[in-house]
Structures are given as structure tokens and as C-alpha cells.
Image 1 (cartoon, helix red, strand yellow):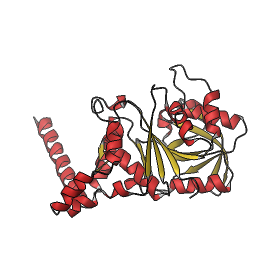
Image 2 (image 1 turned 90 degrees about the vertical axis):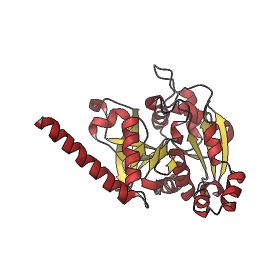
Image 3 (image 1 turned 180 degrees about the horizontal axis):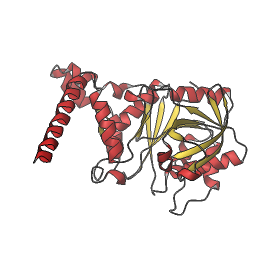
Image 4 (image 1 turned 180 degrees about the vertical axis):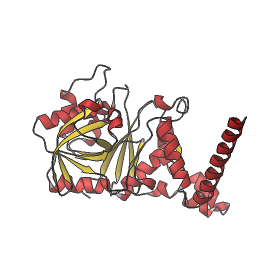
Length: 305
């Protein structure tokens, strides 16, 4: 794959899930057997990405530590015959180079992407949000499809899209599309978290992008919002107004985005990943079913009083 670098922003403070994230990054929260960001990296690796640039901030050192090769731990597991545990560290030896740079001020996703410019330069790059997983077990090929569209269509931007409920459009960047050609949607506008009445569609931006270097100039040109945040969606809309070719690709049917945006989404995702665990999923399903039955019985007893 000609585009083999991904920018992964992980600098957010995680305030929506405090105090859980007071001393650990949101991207390192466990989902089933792995932290969130490991699923993101494994997805990128399976889609041909060979270099990952993490945009970090203060308090995110555990992300770098997680992807380091821990020779002492490997030696200990070998000496004690824990081959099963050793196999769980295969991600350490994936054919990926990791790089890190700091977002020194919390000025939004657009600013985080802009922090990559000195290192990425004039290369096109994938951007994958570090707190969002695409597909259960990160099994999606959306990044490969996006890169292919970027190259064959000579696009400036390619965006992954997911249809959401109308009531939820105010939680996402939403796009306006003008045509659908063999699954490629031409995007003619983008707006960040609109009110439902103002939303041009129910197609949300699904945490994966492919950008030409033009994105950096757009980020320099746009103004921050009222909170001082540099919105990536505004930069995309700026490029559209400059006649850039911006294409959207919807996630495959049955593939969804898992966004660890707040406690409710985290709980739902954790539960789904746990119940689908290849070893313990069935027993956990039984546990949850029994637990719900107990709650129903307790509720009946309270009503009977």
C-alpha cells in the first residue's frame, strides 16, 4: 500500500470518563483483553500501515510503554513456560515503527493533526482516532478501501462514514453528500455536531480519514471556534469550498464504530467485547442472563412488598 503512515491522535484529556482517566489515558482503558488503542493499531497493521505517529500529551507515557518490546517480560515468560501469555505479546513485534510527538496545548483534533506536519511533511497520511475502534476485534478493511479510493479517484480527502440515528447527529461531524457512484460518496459539505434540524444528513464521520498534505494549509487558514478549538471538520469543509475532491465511504454492513466517548458508550462496548470473547464469551452470556433474571426477581419481590 503506497500510503503507509498513520497519524493517531491520543492527546485528549478524557474528561468524559473521569475519574477513570485521572491517571491513565482513555486510549489505554481495557476492552475485553486489550486496551482500546491496541485494537486501533492492529486494525492499521492489518490494512498495510507500517509507521504510526502518535500525537500525545502529558500523562500518556503508558501508550509508548505498551508498544515497547519488553525483553525482560518475554524472557520471564519463556523461562516459566508461559507460552500462551507470550503469544499475547505478538503485537509488540508487528512490522510497525512507532513515533511520538506532543500536542502541548489542548486545542482540538484539528490542532492535533497539525502537530504531525513537521514529521509527516508532504506525504499523504491516514488519520485514525485513538479512542475509536472500527469493527468488533478491529477486523475492518475500511482503511485499505479508503486508500484505494484516494489513489484511484485522485482525491484530496477520503472520509469513513457511518449512518447514525437522527437523534444522535449532534454528537458527530456530519456530512452533506451530492452523489453516490459505486459506493463512493462525493461530499459537498461538513459540519461539526449540528442540531438535528440543521443536519444535512445522518452520515457521521467515523474516526478514519485519508488526507493529502493540503489539510495542513486548511488548518492554518480556518479560525478556531468559540472555545478556541481548531475543528478538523471545519478544515475539511474549507477544502470543499476550495473545490477539493472529498469522498466518503460508508462502513460495510454489519461493521460499526465503537467510540469510547463517555461512560455509556464505554460500558456498552466493554460488555459487547466481553460477551463475544472466544474463550469466556458463552459463560459470560450465561452469567449476565442469570444476573438479569435475579434483578427481575428482586423487582417483583419489591412490588409484592
